[in-house]
Image (cartoon, rainbow, N blue to C red; front, side, top):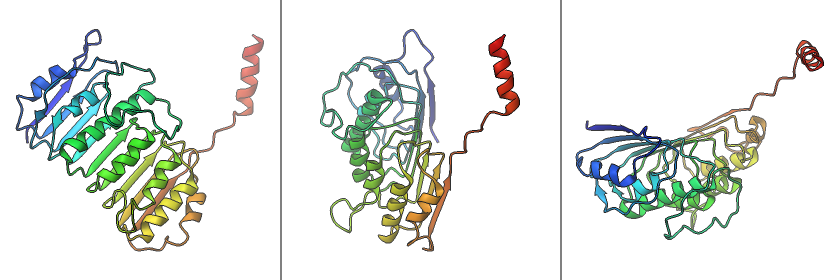
Length: 278
């Protein structure tokens, strides 16, 4: 297996996507690519598309050049895409004007609107160009706009595993997974077998339960759902929504509640008052 791991530690002069793409153009047999960059903005670099016909696995971490990379990488065999720590709070350089770059009409809350757009548009560019048979998608502190989630759900028919951590995704996104795309036969992510939602604090338990029920009734089984430490999702609320399908063969649902906050002990309170008096 041909494996390449690149780490960019040049804080004063981070690598532009053009330099990385130049290097990748020399690696047509590459099968696994792992890039870790820096969460600083870099101006867009015009570049011809690099063809990586046998690349199957890609890792992208702590960088703002992801959109520029994936916009210029042709990866028709890509099966796994793992991304982490791409969210940034700042607003960077908007050097793109492509279909889908308009503001998100949903107007949903986001702590990282600039990087949400970058991630959503890089996913659109990837699938418009080569429509890879992606089976595994991993978002760890990576997010998209609502309309990007909906677009991706309609364009990833091979996805089997989706893991997302610390997303600001709204109930609208979860509801979309529980509704047919156009008729009763075509569903978003029809091959999804494992969904992990962790620390996603904007979604509600009732909506999660409704989505799982709808997909199960539609026969999208077997399926395993892991929902953990989401502030507005409680196990009892999800279970109420699953009453009609809980006994279905092939359905597994695990919900972990956010632990209750510990009240300060009396000794700690007395010590704090003593410190204030001093």
